[in-house]
Image 1 (cartoon, rainbow, N blue to C red):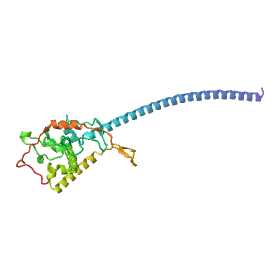
Image 2: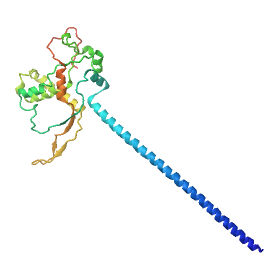
Image 3: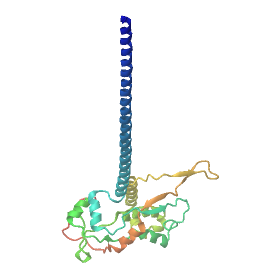
Image 4: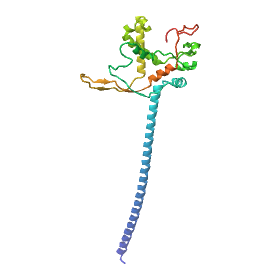
Length: 283
């Protein structure tokens, strides 16, 4: 048989073998691609699950942080320190504490409030309700006084017949006194001779006024109001006019004053007891 025939057979055999190998390789490649597709799809599915879970976790964390921030903000309105918080819970648990009263301030220039206007017994009565309060009827121990930040040895105690407790007052009462004193100062011709504050020397009255302004300044800066005031165009005015009729979340002031009246010890004039610890200068 011619040599060329065997050569041709060898070529055809090798060609057939190559085709079979190519087919096998193609099948193997296809199988590998199929496996790769399955793995890829599975990987994408796993990644998608991880992504969804991650987003859910982040969303949950954000809700928690917002809630925590809101709670912390609320707490900061009601308690100024852990010590004061402890004293509030121990002695003033029934006192209205929460900021839960929605109030719209009336910022109209001529709003007829019971606290404003020409001097009269009715106007004085409105102010004095939150000013002429006695001592708060709470039994603070010496340790409680230290938590309050004061020295119990130099703090005034009421006589035994009045309970023998430390003489404590709500600070809002002094703040209302200061604001009322500024009001009365603008009508001092009416109040001179009828109020003790106006029987002092002019220098002492000036010092008293400046003291009240300073106390109110510190209070306002401590509780800096970040509420937002809008403005309006008003007929006859060329500049935007501020709208001070703003909404606020407040404590129930009337309820607090009512609580104070129901838990007070009226202060009776009495001489300074002998042997008490005295400060050399006013605090």
